[in-house]
Image (cartoon, rainbow, N blue to C red):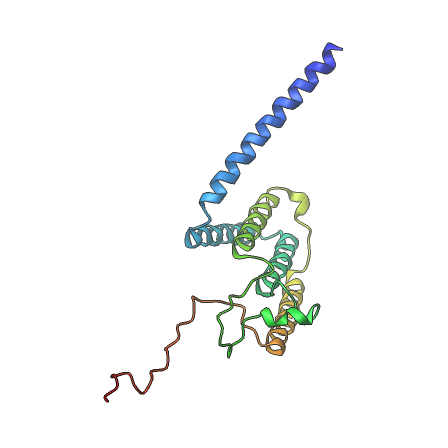
Length: 191
């Protein structure tokens, strides 16, 4: 009986430590939210480290290909609207268009912070995978590279055609400024 209680206490202590670590991690992750430039510089540095590691080892092309497919999937989510007009045509009016009189921000299916976080995790996991030789599957990498470029071109073409068809722009750069019409009696009226 006492052995079971002791194991239960140890697992509770481990669980409490895990919760404390999770809260601390979330705290620091939340602190990075307003620092978009520094977040992306860190991610670019991780990408460079991964590229240098793959180049130096001359392997792990399957890991690189899988990373490329995953990044392409994230990019599509980043460029796609939250509400797809093909699925729900009534909500298509929520998309910002070029000639719209009213400012409507583009609401993404995958917000920028989650996009960054997923990319950063993907690069960290990919770097970790390069330390294990079981992930270094021998392949002819030029075929994978050509296939990825074909897949990228087809996917981007489909996404751009979707943007053109529903006339939306996937970027909201600041709020639009309008110049009001001046009335003809701006100088005052004389009686």
